[in-house]
Length: 143
Image 1 (cartoon, one colour):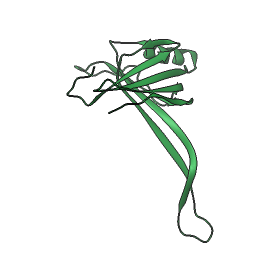
Image 2 (cartoon, helix red, strand yellow; image 1 turned 30 degrees about the vertical axis):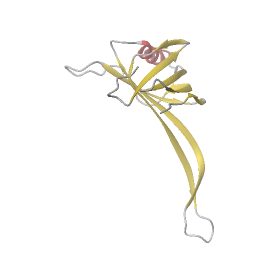
Image 3 (cartoon, rainbow, N blue to C red; image 1 turned 90 degrees about the vertical axis):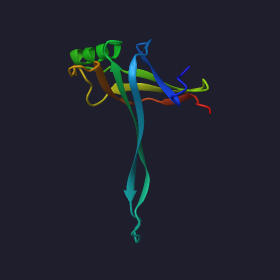
């Protein structure tokens, strides 16, 4: 049960090759809606229609707790290919309810930390991914 001082607590269960691990510091997902703009002939008003939808996943893990995702990145670099991952993000409310969302077919996208350290800091690594698969809402948070 989360601390009552915090309104909610977010946990992330990451599935990699069917093995679950959950040692992440932060987990953020965002939807990006890209529309096409147009102006009908004879009008000066700009309109938009649906174009594409994208989902990005950003993870920050504490290095000393888990190396599973880091190992996947190093193997991807060594082999010249990217692993396909599935993530499940869980937000736990004070009342014990859970919002659980699954992100399928995620691949590395953009920059991922290999070695990133500063004196006196907790060792952390950040990873950026793009979700190519279906995003599924498994359960909803209740008040």
